[in-house]
Length: 299
Image (cartoon, rainbow, N blue to C red; front, top):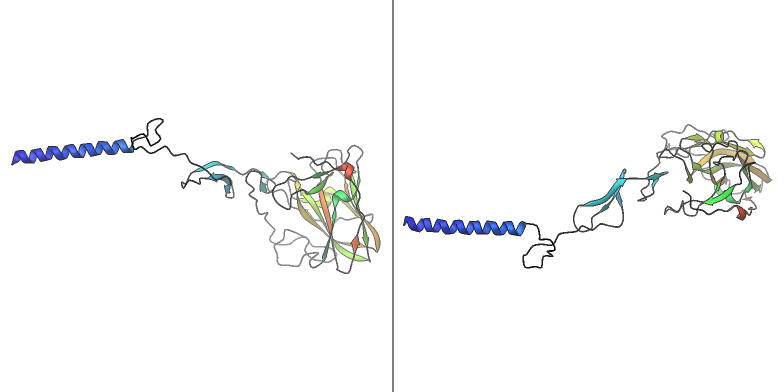
C-alpha cells in the first residue's frame, strides 16, 4: 500500500513539474522573427499606434494611443506665441481685471476692455464702423518705408489673413504715420477704439503712440494688456478703448504717429473702430496701398 502511495506521489510531481515548465514557456518572449504563427503559440510583439491629433492640458500636449492602451507619445510643454500654442493650437484664456479703474472723461463709463465688472462700458449699445489700417493714408518715416503685411494663419478666424500695418515697431519708424479721413453726416460724439498688436508688457497706448483728432492730441489713458507669454507678438491683436471723441459734420482726421524709433516701443496697427449713434453716418475713401503690400510669412 505504501509503495502505491509513493508511486502516485511521483506521478503527481511529474505532472505538476511538466505543467509549470509549459506555463513558463508560454509566458516567455517570442523568439526573434516570431510572428506568433510558427507553431510555438507565442503572441507577436505589440507596436503602439497613436492619434494624429493632439491632446493637451494647461501646460503640455501629447499624442494619445489609439490602440486601446494608455500609452502617450511626444509629450512636451506648450510653445506659445501670444496666447496660442503654435504646436497643438491650445489657447490660453486672457485674464481680465476684476474692477474697472479707467473711465472715459467724456461719458464717464468704463474704458477697460478687460474689465469683468458688471458695469456699462464706453461704446455699449452704439453702432460699429470699422476702418482698416492698410487702407489709410500712410506716411513713411525719414529712414523707413512702411509695409502692409499679413499675419500668420493659426487656424482661427481672428488671425487668418489679417492684414496690418508693420509700421510702429520698426527701427527708424519715428515720424511714420497713418491718417484716417472720416466723413461724418453731422456733429457727433463717438467712441474710438484701436486694434493694436501686443507688446511684452502692459502699456498705455498714448504713451507709445501720438494720437491726434482733427489736429488735437488725445491723451486718454488706455491699457493694452501685455502678451501672456511675456514676449512681443506683433500679429496678435487686441482692442484698446481710447474713449469718446468729438467729430464735426464733414471731413475729420484721425492720425496715429510713431514718435520713437525704438523697436521695443510702439504697436502694429490692424484697424480702428468708431462707435456712434445709429443716426450718424461715417464714411471714408480708402487709399490704394497696393505698392506697400508685402505678404510674407512672418517669423
